[in-house]
Length: 277
Image (cartoon, rainbow, N blue to C red; front, side):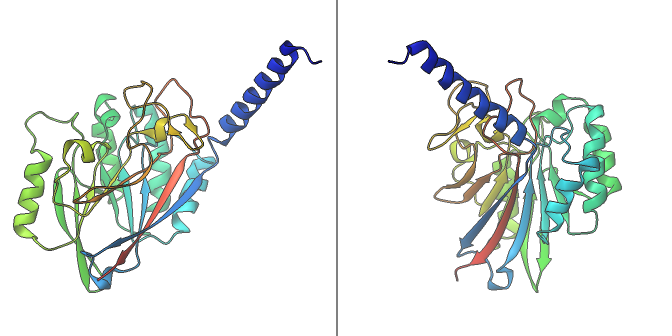
């Protein structure tokens, strides 16, 4: 008869081995492909490809972030969306610089701010870097983005950590719809709370991050840790269907939490839009 202590030690060893393997996999990029259909998308935009990157937090994947850049370029995107938290300190700017240097010119690149971009003090320098590479800073702005003889409306909102007197998202969306009442609207944001806080926002697709995939992920359970670092994560990864819009949440690339990512590989999300008209 086996002693309970030996069985317990073996179980603990298996858990620690799995944790070690997962920790190593934190630097193994995962490509997740999403195919999304919309009645509101013009047929001419069928096949439009977006690469979504979020929450870099100064992380590097290979020398000069080459593995990350090559993985993005291999998808031949029509738009690259950066949804915040790329540099929370001046020391982390180099990782973003290296990435943008390689992505420049491959496709339009659009950026929105994240909470750490504001809180870390690097935002002025980050903005200068983005301008250097021609990145579209979507600071509570929107405009038509032409493609294949049609257009979609690209909009992006500042993180709530921004100035208290900036326009509210619902006000920005109302203004947008007064100019473009029927167009497909792609809404870029950092935080992932839109289905809870603004379920009637008049847009079609929201791309965001912020949740880091729930930091620790378990099979059949999903993410475990919310953005407040408490147990229980909402809207932490994947596609969520609202009555008015779809929301796609990236698991992100890096980390700002003292809790390490576990069973949670860094994600490059690739979205292909299809028209169901």
